[in-house]
Length: 236
Image (cartoon, rainbow, N blue to C red):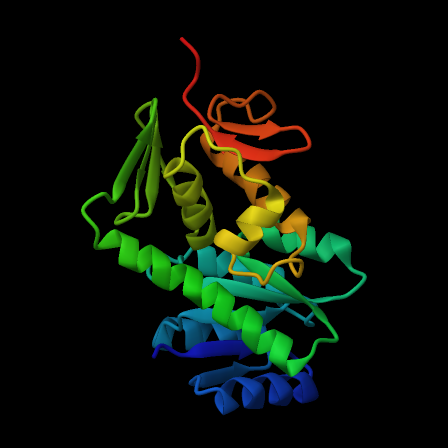
C-alpha cells in the first residue's frame, strides 16, 4: 500500500490524523511545514496528501501548487483540511487542484471514510486503465485514461485525478444527466446525503476552464438547470 503524507503545523492535529490512519492499516508519513512536505513527497511519492491549508510560511495552497507542477508527483491525490467556516479556503483549494476537502474539527472516523473514498476513486480509474475501452470519445472530445489526458479538437489537456474520474464517468454515459448527489455517490464515493454539492460545482467549473474554449458557453460540458450535468457533442 502506498503511503499517505499528512501535513499540518498543529502537533495535536498531526498526531490525531496519523494515529487514526495507522489504526486502519495505512502507512503514514508526517510533516509540520511545507518545505518538509515537498521533500517527503518527492522522496516517497505518496498516493495521497492530507494537507492543511492554513500553515505559516509556505501554506497548503502553495504546497499544492508545487505538487501539481511536479512532473513526477503531479497527479498525487490531495485532501485539504480547512476551517469549517472558511469557504474561501475550500474554493481556493479546489481551484488550485485539490481533490477533496474536510472541514475542521472532524471526527476520526469521518476522516478515515473520506480518505478511503478518495483512494477508491483512484483505484477505480487504475482498473479502468487496464480495460480495453480506455479511450472515450464524444464529438471532438477524447479522453485517454491511461495517459490521463483529454484532447479537445486536437488540443491536449492534462487532468488531475479527480478531473479525470469525473470526466470519465460523464463521457462513459454521453447524453445522460447526472445530479450533484448522484455524482457525489457514484464518482466521489460519498454515502448518500453526506457530500457537499459545491464540490461537484467547483470541479465542473475547473474542467470547463481546462477543456472549453469559452467556459461561459460550453460546447461539451453542460449544466441542465435544476437537474445536473451532462456531456454531449456539439450540434452541427
